Structures are given as structure tokens and as C-alpha cells.
Length: 349
Image 1 (tube, rainbow, N blue to C red):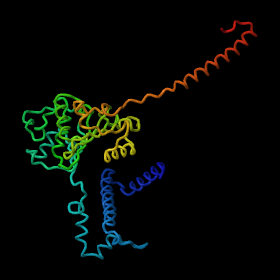
Image 2 (cartoon, rainbow, N blue to C red; image 1 turned 45 degrees about the horizontal axis):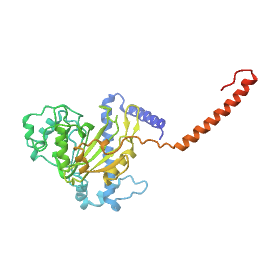
Image 3 (cartoon, helix red, strand yellow; image 1 turned 90 degrees about the vertical axis):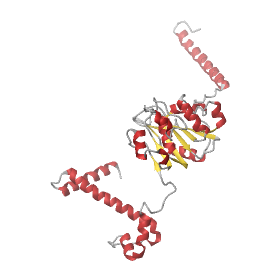
């Protein structure tokens, strides 16, 4: 359907809605219709899920039959209804391997305090998650107190500096990660190389084998900042033998105001991460000994060359081109001098 067709359909539907609502307030009518649309959405998706669950037992209706397939199945299989509805209930139905995900930076406002209150007074007794994901505020200023130094989340690492709570966010999420879980957090590149307290935290995470992958992303992806960001992938069960570096900073599409990662850019990052592939100027597995030699600095440019390769110069070809140009100049000069002589003018030397 073209954009013009979509607009025409929208105008037609809106006109029908106007006729139906009559004198009813448009906002009230919208709420009324949205409820019906939501119920229709639930109904359609329930039918799709039911067809997938029942497989060949899902009734196939003949043309003209005004009943629904699921209603017919209910009528024909009363003894199986309880088991079927149990399978469709999210609380009791089939479960995927990933049972729990924590996104602790999802609209929590005063993040560290609010999340801590929600988890309870003792973080040691808080739940753990299969996956932890976060896009916290970049280089957020915070005011850690003396009590936080004994907090279970930070005790073994130390506190992040007041000027940047990046590692406080990271350690907070990492604390709630299951031993076999995976954490991914978006941060500014400063966490990869800044010194002081951040260097101590980064060093311990590396020595413990917790930093699995460093992914460099393009600049200008976010409204809040135009500078490049990175994704740190952390695990608790990783062997401390190497770290995968992915330099995806040059793989993007320019938008009007921001850059965008194309589907193929995202797929390449995911496949490189999943299979820990190595590719020149894009991905490299760096042994921990090399990282230690660099004082646990994770700056991507230290391990993956981001410089544009210089074009090889063919001196013989350039010499031949210059000789050809010189001959062409001499030929043109001779022709020009012929014209000058005919005009009685001084020729070129």
C-alpha cells in the first residue's frame, strides 16, 4: 500500500468514525474505540497463539462458517480446556531459557537510590537475573556516602568518583547478575581508559575475567550526546584469557540529525560477538597479557587500528605519467610557437 493509499484509507476511516460518534466528544470516542481495538488485538493474537499450540488439532473452518476456530475447539474438547489455558498463561505456560531481565535504568529517576529502595534494604538478599541491560545517564554526578563503601555492590571494587557514576551503575547491575548471566551496558568511552578510582574498578573486573567484550559504536547515535559510546558486555563465569574488541564506529547510516545503525550493522555486531570472529580493522580477541602490558587500558584504538590505510604509491607509474605529461607539454609548446611565428610574436623558450 502506497503512502497516498494509506492517507486516503486513514481519511476514510476517520470520516466513518466521525459519523459513528455523532455528538460524542472526540477524546471520549477515541478512548472508547481504542478499547475495542485493543480487545481485537488480544483476540487475534490469542487465536494465533492457539493455532501454534494446538497444531493439527486446530479446527479449519469451511467457507461461510461464521464460528471462530477456537470457539469450535472449545465446544469439541471440554476435557482439555484447563490444560490448554494453563499452556497459554504467561505465569504457567512454556518458558524460554531467559527467565528474568533487569533494566535498572528504565525511567527510575534518581537511579541508584530508587532502584536500591525497590530492591530492598539489603542488596545481598536481592533477586538475580539472567540478563542485565542498561543505558544509564552518561557521566552522571553523584554523592556517595561512607555507608556505600560497605555496600555489597561496591565493597570489593571501591566507589566510582563523584564526577562520574558510570562504574556505580555498572557495578549495581553486575551485582544482580546470575553467575551464568550476561550484562550489557552503554557508557561513554571514558570508562575504558580513565584513571584513579575508575582504573582500579576496571582492573579488578579484568583480572577477575568479568569483562567479556568491548563494542565501540558510532558517534551521534543519541540525542543526549554527539560523542561516541561503547557497550561493555560482562559475565561472571568467563575465563580471564582474552577480551573481544569490536570497532563498529564506522558502520552506520547518516540521518538528518543523527546517525543510525542499519540492520546489517547490528547483525554484524551480533554475529561477531556470538562467534568471537576476528576481522582486520573491525574485531580482535586481545589476550589478557597484552591488556596487562597496557596497564588495563581498554581504549579500542590501542588494540584495533582505526587509522585509514595509506594508499600504496606506484613510483614507476607516476614517473611514466610525468614523462607522458612532459612530452604532451613539449608538443603543445611547439604548436603554440608555430602560431606565434606566423603572427610575428616572440616564441616561448
